[in-house]
Image (cartoon, rainbow, N blue to C red):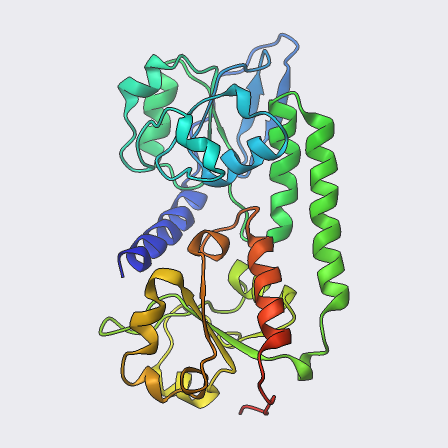
Length: 306
């Protein structure tokens, strides 16, 4: 259950920092290479094109590889584990325990961060004379398109960034167009947390619900406003399909009272890679296609749930 605690720590910290904002860097009057108002409404200005970049966001790191700018990555966070080539890049610590000495030794021209870095750490990096650009991981899959464009501009891969953003939007539009009618969708329950500490799943207006709906299914938590779900309600909706992180699958499907759920008894519990679904990233589309395939091949009879 450690991943569940980490999942909620990231979620809560990101929400808090979204409102607190980041420190605005000083600006100059010279013609700048890059100017932008970021998600924290800060005015960002880079006078020259950065050649040495540190990314402390897994999503940004993935996008840098996507647009072909990985050669500019001189450092990444411990959580940047995809694609596999990231193993060869110097790590500068986690999102809450940055190794500032290691960071400074890399002589970066800019540090790219998401929403998980504290104001204190942003200030510390900027006091070292290193510009910080906040590119917040958006709360929807469609928001990834803007990240592709911004990262493309910063890394001098603007056309590639725009092209990949358009491809991403087209993928989303295609899956929306091919989704079945609402009444024909199977009910999918994603296990965010379970056990003695309570049951948790994705509520409405989350990127996880968006993933499930793009896959042509209905999110079991679509009427919830918070992440907690009562066990009584879980058994009432009695989901057609259950998704759980790969490492938690055996523990979940063998634990009472989950063994009494129809999906568990019928073998309709499926493991999923946490990196595909827990945070907004390029790999969310893997989750969409995976869930869509499960819904197509899973032999269930759709019933109306109260």
